[in-house]
Length: 210
Image 1 (cartoon, helix red, strand yellow):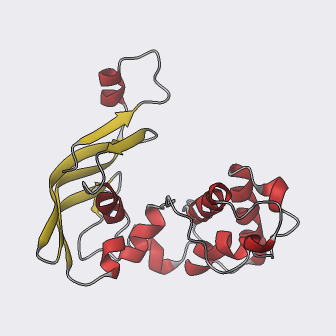
Image 2: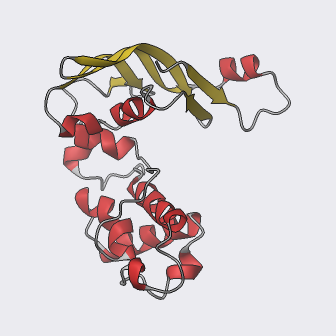
């Protein structure tokens, strides 16, 4: 079973952990969550908070359900038939149960990004991989996409390394940019570019639900 969920406070060194938890807002809360692969129940009544701007570690032995829980936060189980959720995973401050069948999983993925242990990039250029989330959201302005791609690559400390070959597929170059660590950083850029910013120019189909 999934048996340990720990929240690590990273900016509260001088204050007790309990005090920091009281003062810091909750970003999401898992309540009575169970998950089923068809008739087989994989998770049983899991509950814990996820604090805003904190690191939450999910710890357990192989096969205990860690990845199953993480995939639920991104609604990845929806891609396969006969999977079923019970309970709630509420996102704050929106107070939206993201596993509700009434919520579009594509919109959930705009709010909760994932960086996987094993890199799985699209068979496209660095630029296309980083910009993919923006295009899905309907952002087509070249100047806006260029700006967000550069910003995300700078935040991942990759800009100086790849700025001269953004249109190339990294697997073929000799600098090692296709290494797992670098690809994870590039995939992180996909999450960074896809973060929503307050704007009246957001696509209407997105702004209606969140």
